[in-house]
Every structure is written in C-alpha cells, then in structure tokens.
Image (cartoon, rainbow, N blue to C red):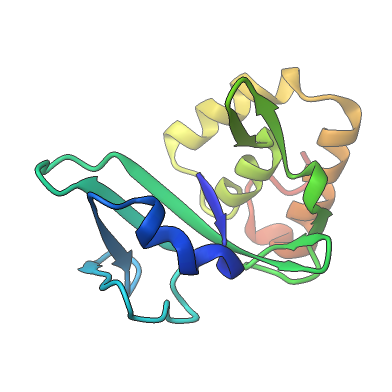
Length: 147
C-alpha cells in the first residue's frame, strides 16, 4: 500500500491497535512511536496487530508536489496523483506499471515473474510510462532498460 508523507500524521490513529515499525535503516525494523516524526530517509512502514507476530501491512511512503506524485528514487519521474492507481470496490490500488517501476532497478526472480505476467496486460500508455520512467531513473543500471 502507498501512503503520502503529508498524510502520515493520522496513521497512528487510523491504525489504532497496530504496532508500526520503520525500515530504518533499510533492511532493519525498529518501532515507530506515536509522536516521533518520520525520518526523511524512511520509505517503508511495517504494521501488525498488537496481539500478532505476523506482519499484516507494508506501507510505502511517497511524496507529492502539488497534484503530482514524485518518485522518491528520482524526482524527474512524476505522474499525476489522479493517475497513480485504480479504485476497486472499497480500495485504491497502485497502478501496476508504478509497482513495476519500483522493482526495475534490481529485480529478483519474483519481480521478473511479475513483469512477465503484467507486461502483456498493460496498455500502450502504461508501457510507455514505464519505459520512460526506467530509462530516466535507472538507465542501463536496470536490466529492464529498453523494455
């Protein structure tokens, strides 16, 4: 799930009954206390119910500039906020080409499977956006460069 940094002030209230952990530094989790500001370099929050040891949510933290989503990996990669995802009954989901963008720098085998399954389902506009975003942000460092 994606949450905007500007909306984080209500997250503890919305997820009352959950423990929230920050990936700070990445690869390591530490408890996020209610009144603690989110450090600028933190982009992942893991959540679980207090009575559970299993993680139930992973939230990706992203930025906006006016009405545009701005990639935390490269601020040149942008997209209108309104086109960042789809609304399904009762839930808004991240557009698959944006999710693939996050996976494109160092794709794992499961990311390659996702790309193979999703790519044929993307429309022309979504494919063009993904190609441009990968080229802009990662260039030849990405094995998906020049899709």
